[in-house]
Length: 117
Image (cartoon, rainbow, N blue to C red; front, side, top):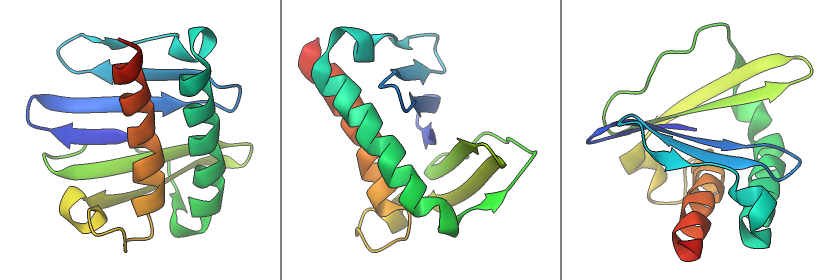
């Protein structure tokens, strides 16, 4: 998930083995938490599961633009290629958007990193 926040894009990565990372455009971030913390590993695996359910709401892509402020972009890497979809942060906030559940699952990774700090 690439998220257009005020300070620049933030990227949250979840991998099926429980690897989870958060990269901030200012050079900061969190790495390796899924190996050290069960809660982060479970959040990453849950996010991957939710991403599989969200796949029908995406389309295949070979372009990877950064999000604008207030925009959230998802890139799902599959055996069939990379799929993408995007939404405005305000649209996803009401939990009615097709990508809201995925956005929430990715946010849970950030939450778990904060809890372990």
